[in-house]
Image (cartoon, rainbow, N blue to C red; front, side):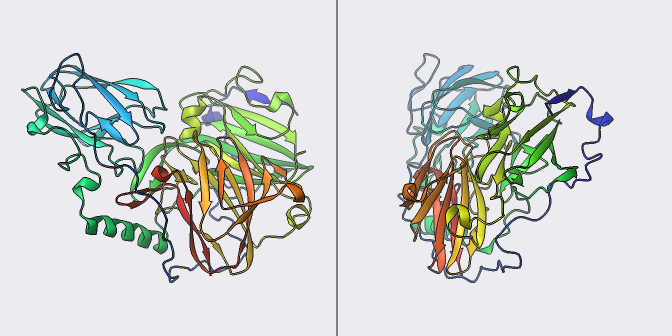
Length: 489
């Protein structure tokens, strides 16, 4: 069956009608049924050998608009030039005239994606997420006299020093006579923290992680199909939501069935599958099955293999599963830098035909875990959560652990596991032949790549597992972002 576009509104079509299907089921795969998951009493073994990332505020800079504002303060002008780097905002402190609409010309000269935001009356007015080399003008209304917070809104970047201020006054030059640099502590970072405060921040983050249950929402929830004869039918709805990336921190997100990553879908070679995709976004959408072998008509590229799915419409994809066991991905292929960056991705796991991984990888793992690496509009994250809200991988001593890993971000992420050497057994959905498998403790995962790795959990403790681009994992106030742990008990 080919794809079928139906120009009907959501009000005219019930996404679940005829499918009897529960959206976002409230359980997830955590190894064998019945395994205990209590682990808060474990000894603290999450010591990361991380180098402190560059921190502190902007180092000061000259004013924009062709005027010398002196010592990093911007001239009294309606246009301000701003440069973002890893991890500073230049100028950090800006003085602007009262009562004049403003334009900030923001350029990202750092290798990591950044935003530039100004907090006005409790609302953050910010740029889109700017990739390396990108720029954008940010319009700001006329400000009343006072000082307004400035920050990069990517989770964790403010703690690395990407903070500052805009002071609206009737004068020009640096605010309060400050040179706008980090040494006075006005821009945050470790320059404004004592050693004791830094240590307390690290300790509190670890305690919060060990306590668990930082956020009530989790992605990767299994989605069971409704059967239509021999066809497995999966109903997916794309919509805008608020997603809690860490405790109390909500980001604008886009989700499949209300969760990020989207529901985990498990199929087997020879299955016939049908995906009914309902678009409740305010913009077009198309669904692509990344790495999956299928007919060209089902490839999900707008205006190449199908029209875009417009708001209120739905589309049907149908094909046979012919690929070998491993991890594949479904994700947006329309405005994908934003839509994927905001959470429109999910796992399509092709299981072995008989259900056991032993014929494929030589062992049948007791624990199976799916991990998405992210660095988009939701910030540095694992399964769309930032440490300490990330979930641990929990195993009993001597268990084999199979981890399906996918990078749906825009940056390379070298994932490093403490305490173990793991075996890389699959890449991009293809099991590696025994002679091609290899041992590692750090695996570089490029955007779009997927790996299966096996770990023999033969040493008890909480073993850190994190991205080894250190600015993605730790700052002066503690660990954040792409950090979790393999907990062996």
